[in-house]
Length: 343
Ligand code: GN1
Ligand code: MG
Image 1 (tube, rainbow, N blue to C red):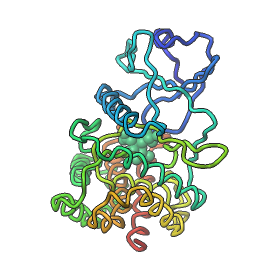
Image 2: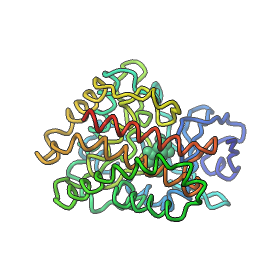
Image 3: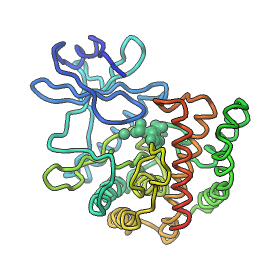
Image 4: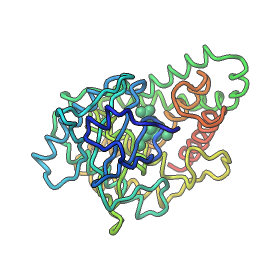
């Protein structure tokens, strides 16, 4: 989608109306632009329909940044640049907030995990974030999205989408609905884990796709973690799980040919090792036991979310063809089957 930046936004952040602006990245939610003038910046329009509390995002990030600069000053944590009046968020006339980050030079993002070394590095990067935030008072953070990775709630949302869906959509998604229901036992396992108090509440990233890591162009090492909108209290299974979900298969959640989906054991092992290389010493025996549950839980949650969105008539995720959310759900259910067999 073509997006023009309101002149008042360019002006607030001190960008020239002639600055070169192009689109950046592959997120589903916000619009992210690269602004090139004498220096390079990342300009982002926050999707306020999804993140209804942008101020909470900014506040959580400030808390984390302050803690990190006091306790881990060497750690690179991206923070926004204020506008001319010191605002981190600048609201356009349509009510949508914009923000600016400095572009972190000499880094690149990758959309697919292509080697174990890369998987290890990415997982280490996400592990290090939570490790460095260990000790911060997580009760001072607020959720930016309520119950974001609460599997029980996502299952209920799926059920309510199903109850309200048109017969045509239900017919079309018959196979996926059946398979989604077959994995409901994961919801019970999730509830038992949480109710049993086995998992510590930490500050987690909650969107740990590999493309949310900036890799150093020269060394290939993880330089820093980006997309910090869901930096909030959570369990380690959310972060490790989403890494597994997005890294283990050689094809992405968009792949329509599900025979292409496979379980790459060497990648799985590297993700777990990379994450534990940072976090192991901070984890309880119960948490270590929950490691194999992580990938299944997060893959299931995305299958439910895509399927519910399809049944609702695609109100949440950007789609480029009508069945895209159904395809994504089918893809994730296949991956879930494989994770269930292998982990
Ligand atoms: C969304 O925008 P993006 O691609 O970073 C979603 C994640 C999903 C992901 C699936 C706020 O993230 O939870 O895992 O799509 N973010 C939100 O591709 O819903
Ligand atoms: Mg992203």
